[in-house]
Structure formats: structure tokens, C-alpha cells
Length: 101
Image 1: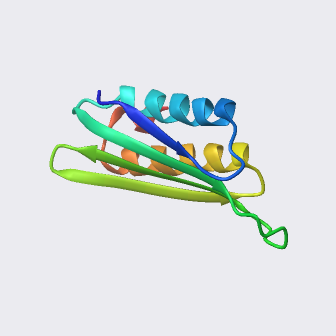
Image 2 (image 1 turned 60 degrees about the vertical axis):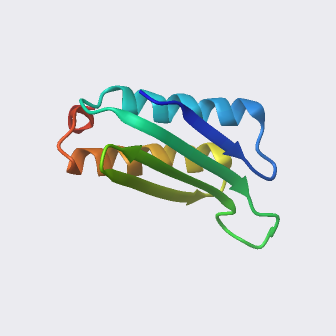
């Protein structure tokens, strides 16, 4: 598998970036086809009026296609968990082993 790159944005700790990397890498490790690379972007928008200011996005490049998912939540941890669920759903649609997990 290619590397998972995490781009931590505003108010994202190194621990949260590492958590996001581990969650995405775990899902991608079950794929039968090679992953060329994956990029996770995390940020917390500074607007306190937003109900879900934490944002998480992932873009996975496989041979011949790109899989994307995104999520918003009240906290960075929540956004990463929702992102993991969204990515797992996308991978299930491809018919990969994530369908069993």
C-alpha cells in the first residue's frame, strides 16, 4: 500500500493526525488492489457558531480510479470516526473486504 499522508489544519493535534492516519490505513490494508496513495485533510473551522466545525476529507488513489469521502462533526475525533464510516461504505460499494468489517 502507498503511504497515507495527513494534512493537519487549524487546531488539529499530532495525536489526532496519527489517529486519522491509522483509521484510514486500517481500512485500506484490507483491499485486494494496490493503493497508490491516500491523503487525509483535517481542520477545525474557527467559527464558533457552526454546529459541526470539524472537517475531515480523504482522497484515495487506486489504479485507474479515485475514492473520496468527507465528514463534518462537532469535534475532530467525531469527524475522523464519521470519515472512517464513509470510506468503509465507499469501499463496500467496490465489493472489497471492507464489506465484512
